[in-house]
Length: 416
Image 1 (cartoon, one colour):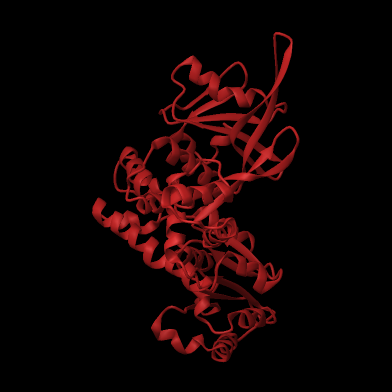
Image 2: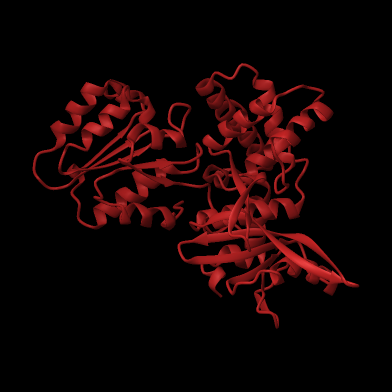
C-alpha cells in the first residue's frame, strides 16, 4: 500500500540543494521515515540520481549502531563520496547519533552534499531545529494523514473512511489495522508509552500525573477558549489540586514542543493585532485525542473543528481565532459586541475567514453563523464549513457554504 504525501514531497523537492540541512519533524509515527526513505528516494532514482549517490542510514537500526559514533559517521559518509556530483545524505532518527549537531554542521562543509534528517523523540523536537542549527536548518513539518490522504489509501467507501478517520485519526499505521480494538489499543499505548514518556524523559518531569491530567483537560476542551488561570482553576475544582499558572504553562509548552497539540491565538480583525490570552488548543491528531479520553467524548462539532484546523495547517496556512467588534444602536443607545470567527487562515497575501458549523439547517442557525462574518469590513473570502454533504452554495452576501468532506477532499476547496 502506497500513501502519496505529495505536499511534503513537493516541499523536499523545492528545497533540494538549498545549502541547508533539511530537518523533517513531526509527531512520532506520522510517516517521516516513509517520506524520505521511500517517496523521496524513489523521486531521486526517477530523476536519474545513481543509487550510490544516495547515502541512507537508519540510526535506530541496531545494525547501524557503530555509525552512532560521530567520528565513524563522518568517516563513513566521506568514504562514500567518490566524485564531485551531488550526494544525498539521508539520516533517519538522527537523535541516536552522538553529538549530532556537530556532525550535521560538518556535513555543510562538504560542497557536494545535500543533507536530510528526521528526528522525533525526546532529544529532537521542534525547538531543537532553531537552537541547534542557528539558521542552518530548514524544517519540513509532517502532519498525520489528512482525510484526503487517508481516503486515498483506505480499503472501503468514503463514508467508512470518514468514520474511521473521525474516530481513530490519521496515523498511517491505523490503515493496516482490522479491528476497532486494535486501533484503540495502538493509539492509547502510543500516547502513554511513547509521547508522554518522551516528554517526561526530556524535561525530567517530576509529577507525570499532573502532566497527564492537564492533557486530559485540554483533550476535553478542544476548540474552547482557555488560559493558564482558567486551567489552574479547573485543576482546583475538578481534580482538587493546587497547580500554579507557571507549571500549567510549562506543561502546555512541552505538549506543543512535542507536536501533540497546537495553539491558536486570538486576532483582532479590525484592529489587525494579536490579543493574546485566552487561546484555543487543538490536537495534532484527533485519534490520539479520542484515545486519551477512552473514546468517551466524540462530539462531532468539536472534532470537526479540530480536523478543519489541522487541514488548514497542513495546507500551509497560519491559523488564528478571529475577533471582530460590532457597534449596535438600539433606541438611541450604542453598544459594542464582540463576535468570534472560528479561523482566520493566512498564507502570504492570501486570507480566508472560516466558520465551522455542524449544521445551518434553518434561517436562525444560518444567521448566527453568518453574523461574525458579515461584520468583517474587508473583501477576503468568507466560508462556512458544515457537516452536511453539500458541494458549494453561495448566498447574496458572497458567503460560501461547503460540506465538510467536500472541503477536505478537494485540495482547492478554499478557492472554489
